[in-house]
Amino acid sequence: MTENFEELFGNILNENKLDISINFENSKRTTYCEKSKRITDEKYILKIVKNKIDIICSGEKSKFYALCDLAERVKEKNLSDGEFVCSPSFAVRGYIEGFYGKPWSHESRKSVLCLMAKNRINAFFYAPKDDRYHRELWREKYPEDELKKLEELIKLSQKYFMSFSFCIAPGLSMKYSDEKEFEALLEKTKQLYCAGVRSFGLLLDDIDEELSFEEDKKLYGETVNAHIDLINKYYENLLKIDSSIKLTVCPTVYHGRGDEYYISKLGQNISPLISIFWTGKDICSRELTTHEALKFYENTHHKALYWDNYPVNDCSMFNEMHISPIIGREKDLWKYSEGIIANCMEYAECSKIPLITIADYLWDSENYDSQKSWEKAIEQVIGVENAENFIVFADHLYTSCLKDANSRRMYKVLGEIEKSFKKGETEKAFSLARDYLEKMKKCREFLKQDLPICRELEKWSEKFFVTCDIMENIFVFLQTKDDKVKENLLSLADKYISLPAKISNDIDIKNELREELGIY
Image (spheres, one colour):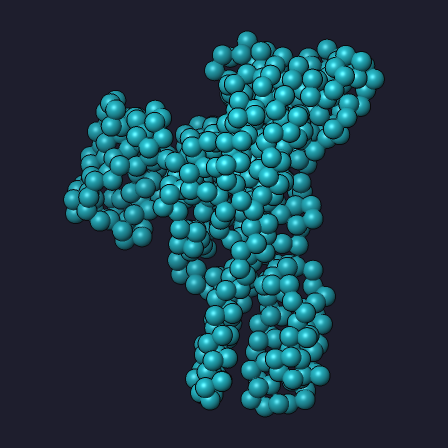
């Protein structure tokens, strides 16, 4: 195989005694995607007849993706015979460390990057808001030790055929009319270019919409004019450094209809080779539609590169844990957009689960199954042996801008229990209850382990443990009608309400108990 593949997957293919041949072919069938009418270096063909596999591809990148695909088929015991022609729906498939909060550790960055490579993600944007050298101290160069860590990440991304984009955010304090400010920006850029960066992001988001300096107001009049000048001048100088450099811009107006004055003027006055971040209708958009993407293109003359604010949970969302699958992105969005870059949470381990579902959607949006993808993602991150236990907890963490139904598995069980009680099948009802309580107990035992993902989930698992206690006491009360159990239930309800983490649906748990069980 290849060294980079074996570092991610081990000897899984050799262990399964597969006869694999790899054939490189620079032709239409290995480089042209019929659906999107796009030339790509990511297409491959798998011909499978029992344990004999032929991989036909155009180069090392498509070979790597084919091996990743094959490894997943083997792990899932889904090695069916046939010819499979594979190419991605979206050209750009990525994630961004772009949240407010404690930046990821270096080891976490490497861990997420490796996992995303396994799932055929091809872009990583480095933009943690609280990395001072990214935003607050944008003029200052990175210290040597920090630069070495970035260099290691860049090399790792290259190894796994993933573009590494360094984003710089000068907008909070930059005086656009001051040439010295621009020179500082260029010098910082050159430091990062020397470290191996070949793709840059210029972020002008979350800043005042009005110009701050009188000199800027006099020279430019409007903010959009200053930004157009900065972007064009920066891109022109990037191309002098290296004509292959890629630039992505995040505008000050980064969500809406796509026909606003600022974004329309900006888009129409910068190079069509510059990518523009856009979050959709809202900052955290429940849906991304082809109609909205087409409108953005018509008005800006650019296909949107979506900065998708899911699964991020910073700012007002800090009590939510966004661990559910991506939904609400239309199947043919790839036709009118460059791609999607998913903004992650401060919690790197937890981010992995929704990121895998995003990777699945981006690779094959037309056949994306959110629930199937989510369950497979949990198996990848948690392990097959603990996946079912973890899902009992993860079922309660659907609260997000996506607003999908929450706690569906639990409410399904409760519905079956209620039906059994109404039919007079008391023993069946309590049997169903005991089975679910046993699942909750196993889940609880898993969450108490000293594992990175369990540590990240402590705030939410604490509330889940109270939920477990409430459920257990409910069924004890139904059997005994004991006043002490009733008092304990009301005490647990108070504790549940006092905990800030959001799990399950937002309900008045005391009133629910009173109405359902007659507890007053």
